[in-house]
Amino acid sequence: MFSALTRRAALERAIVKGGLVAGTAMSAGRLFALWQKGEAAGVKATPRDVLGPFYKKEAPDVKQLHKPGDPGFPLKVSGRVVNTRGEIVRGARVDIWHADHAGLYDIQGYRYRSKLTPGVEGLYEVDTIMPGHYSDRPAQHIHYLISAPGHKTLVTQVYFATDPFFDGDPDKNYTKRGIVKERELVRPVRLYEAPGTPRAAVSFDIVLERA
Amino acid sequence: MRLLCLAGLAAGAWAQTAAGDRTIATEVTISAVGFAPDGLLAAAGSDRQVRFWDAASGAFKRSVPWTKEDGSAVTFSPDATLLAATGPGGIVKVWELRHGEMKHRLPGHAITPNSIAVTRDGKQLASASRDQSIRIWDLPTGAARHTLHDALGETGRMAFSPDGSTLVVASNDTNLRVWNTATGRLIRTIEDLKLTTFAMDFSRDGQWLATAGADRTVYLWETRTWRLARKITGQPEMISSLAISADGSKVATGGFSELTSRQPVKLIIWDAASGKPLRTVDAPHRVGGLTFSPDGALLAAVAGEKAIHVWRAK
Ligand SMILES: [Fe+2]
Image 1 (cartoon, protein in one colour):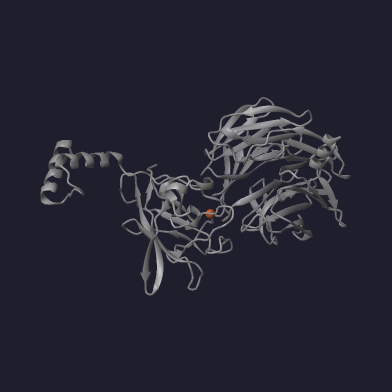
Image 2 (spheres, rainbow over the protein chains, first blue to last red):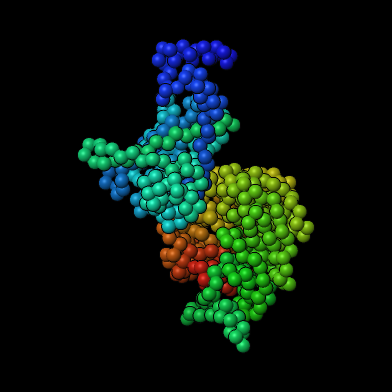
């Protein structure tokens, strides 16, 4: 544990040596106040969402969820599993599942389903396709079920800011039809070009509460 | 005269097929159906009326009022003498249908329950909510008896054993949990299923529980040991509804398409012992609330929003 005074001294040294740089013109005192405020807030836990009726147990631990030639826009989803203290969570399992391009869940098998083990840095990553729309829940989404020793199991979902469902304005329209409860679960989509084809990437960090 | 005409219209028009099956087009959305004593078929409609017909002749008998809330869970007690429905503010309401009066208003859930079940004797009610609790109520008094902790707060179907001593709860985590209703203790968690159960029914003697759901299979559990005894396969769709006949000889299942609830599906009556289909009929939409008449001759369901279907089961 550090006292506020020694912490302040250390931070001031960092400011002098260029290890901490203010984004805009800002006094050292203001910078320190902001830093303290940020630490007190910690990291906010990822909001919950519903599990839904199509979860399937015992999915394989695979990074590639689609097969070559599957219809749908190629999508990479990645993020880190941390806790509300910002620590990397050890021993986490990330269950991910979503509908295919036509909006159907694979019930017979495990297509578009994976139970991932994040790497040493808490990183997880999957290559898949953009989920389709289905009539009961017409916003594209990926389901998550994350468990880890010493932490509360989290059930949540990720939505896409590019989804036509949000009419181009997720800030305004995310509550439409009561499907999405939390704005932060609607993630920005980054488009990029990988060997000749356009791809989409979404980052979604998972913050677990300690049990 | 005008009033009479309106009553006649809303009561529903019966159409009969050559096979003896009937469809009642109701003009109002039907939330639940049940077979009541004296050979009556009961249906709870969105116009806040519970209607009773003579199940054999189709003659309209009477109606009693209830309160339909948007998106509420609605269920009849097994003998359709009670109707239970959830409402805003987490409240469960119970109507006694003989005299058409509201008997109980049960507050306590933080979030409106999405699933309810009533025992065969009408003395206990279970309500499950996304507030991660399942509550068991004593119906004669309306007292809350137990609050059970629900794993992830997503209970689908619940079923009481015929004697009311156990409550089986199907959760979206795909597990079945068996609760002792007297002590409020969890007796067993059945973790064998990989996919979620959408429909359940006990045999009348309480020795069997049939469950079915997303994987299109009927599982028959022996309730003394809670071991899986048999499976019945052959339903082409996911199973949304299931009923066991009073004599235990038949199991009926109705399907639904995950793509849209408006696609035609199958209703299948199975021989419980052999697992062979006895009768397969087309249902226009997702089948819900399947129930056999007490004599096992008829099978009723909500299939589509504004229709009740009554199939011949013998
Ligand atoms: Fe979904």
